[in-house]
Image (cartoon, rainbow, N blue to C red; front, side, top):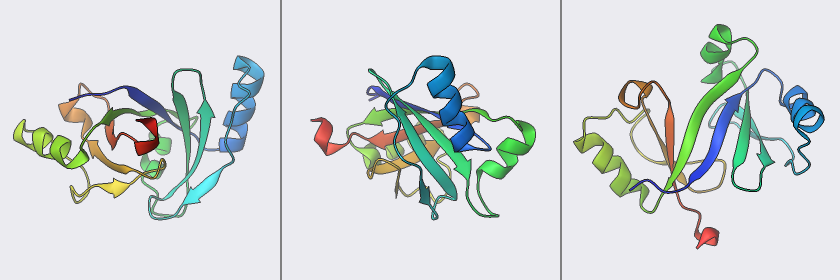
Length: 140
């Protein structure tokens, strides 16, 4: 069921400062522009790597799901890992059958790559928040 690692989500209080760090400290050269996803409560930016991406996420609005994370981790840090799956609905149903908690309503929503995603609770995934995303059609 699990596909390739698509990205690592990193929460940050400032995408601009994080991009500066990735450029100056690690030599990143391929970074997308920052954009807002109001329905998710986040600003998003991707650092493109040869084999994956780093998704930088910054809170947007008072009800951002990142607010609590950044209270506990004020400098930011790894927020989630994202794996691709062929069929998001099938993956969601399999997670539920296996006893995992799918966060939110449980219905897939559109993620930053424009494809359906779900999140699986860290308590079921060894302490790691896991995002499952349907493999982008352009990747085929």
